[in-house]
Length: 392
Ligand SMILES: Cc1cc2nc3c(=O)[nH]c(=O)nc-3n(C[C@H](O)[C@H](O)[C@H](O)COP(=O)(O)OP(=O)(O)OC[C@H]3O[C@@H](n4cnc5c(N)ncnc54)[C@H](O)[C@@H]3O)c2cc1C
Image (cartoon, rainbow, N blue to C red; front, top):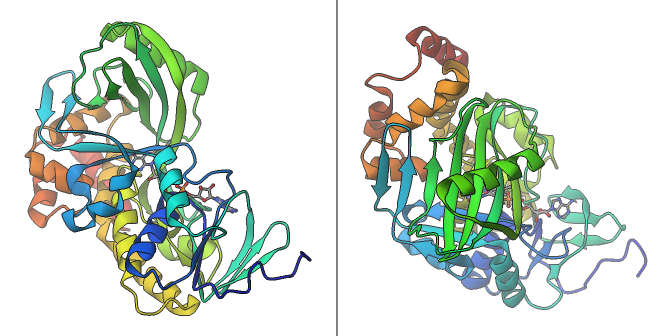
């Protein structure tokens, strides 16, 4: 094939650049709801989804939309726990973990042969054309850029960063539910907690997580800390095969319009590339589901219309995240790093339904006030300063 030959003569309605979480969910939604459309995914990896465990609370995803993620769920539980120096709490909400292996398998099953293009690096996008690094060109009615985080320099960010390790225990570990935050650990490097998922009676997935201002991640040192933590919990054992590292944006502010324009101007964007993430947690799964379902309901998939629709969704999402950006600002700018855990400890004493709405990004006005009133564990002068910086 010569370098400027179109890949296939059958017309493509939609080309999605990036077969990660957001791109795959859009494809699933369209295969189910709009099977008449030809959708092509172009992914640079040898498989879709990268190397991820994506977790969410049961109520993060609307009941009517759960079918979209069900085939991807590798583990689920009926409750979860948090541990702080001052208290432990079991919470009733269900929790589920999706795996990239399942996403890859589901995508291969859902996409007609040839429409999932793997090992292909996208080098340029326009609203109706994808150019690959090897020179091939894919023309489509519309294009979505779902290539994960792009240039984030327009945003004011802190980081939630972590190393996760699967851990095989010599004896049954006895952990029944995910411990989504154990903040009883040393806090000298910003807000730190350990996150543990019990995958089976003798297999855990343990993640050591830090909320810090800098993005650097000392992977080997953190792996050793995970082994130390497991030993302290009485979970004698050895690391398994799975290692995951994450550097998730925690957004305090910035110029959304500049972020949107930074990559592939005029092209519709989904997932992190489109700014669809929770400003406080960096998580994107609930938004990826909402966006995929919304796209599947659109009447027109032409590049320019898609861009306008998705830009409108992304702007609305950015506006809706203002409160979470404010909280992120208070966490990073108003609290001493070693005292940040107190903000989360106070939060986790609140009503479980309020906590659930917070993670789903659907806090009510009452929720927002409830989180802020009382005695915030940050000095009032600094809180006012952080608020001033946030709103200026
Ligand atoms: C280790 C880890 C764990 C996380 N856990 C959670 C979680 O539990 N819950 C949650 O909600 N969020 C989680 N997140 C945050 C966020 O939801 C994920 O990063 C999510 O995968 C983002 O989805 P996305 O589709 O925007 O990007 P990605 O899933 O990263 O997908 C982007 C895809 O584009 C491909 N790509 C990139 N460049 C090109 C190119 N030039 N050409 C072709 N393909 C390209 C990549 O290979 C990748 O497959 C996690 C993030 C990480 C890193």
